[in-house]
Image (cartoon, rainbow, N blue to C red; front, side):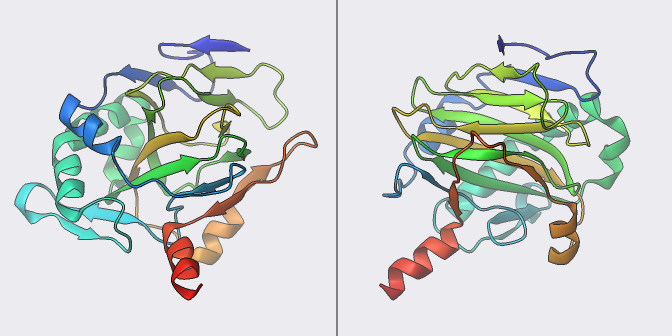
Length: 233
């Protein structure tokens, strides 16, 4: 396995871009202070597509935000969108210019991954035009593993570094997975540029997951599910 700090494997079918210090200092500090959930160390929580989350359309004073949780304040979501949208669109134009015309809205989600949790090897949904994963905290953890196919022996690892972003445009060869380092909880911001979202049945059919024998199962919550269970209990 090789740790990468720049554009990865230019000869691969899919391109990956690494950007250090993606967030400005104030936004980075604010995101590192978001609410932490008391999860078992083999579980994770985030707003996965098709269920819930923070969706935003428009620009500047005309933005419209939909959210069903209190992880990120609505005004802060607007600020993130207005600050980083142009940069994200430039990255999309660099990595997959044919997809720029399909942009419809953006999504932001904080992902909390337990120290012993491991997410399956998977492909992102086809309505994701661009995925940007921004490392928040801690200072040291595991980055993202990249593969061209599910059982690819030539795995690339994006080295973990606080405020480092890894960006790619999902396609049939952008397999990836991630997990905790068995020492500390892993926090990232997921920033996605989206086309019009697939309906849930279509999305399920498009979802591609591979779980090798060595990989432990991981319970993945949405914030909405977790909060509803806590309120009920």
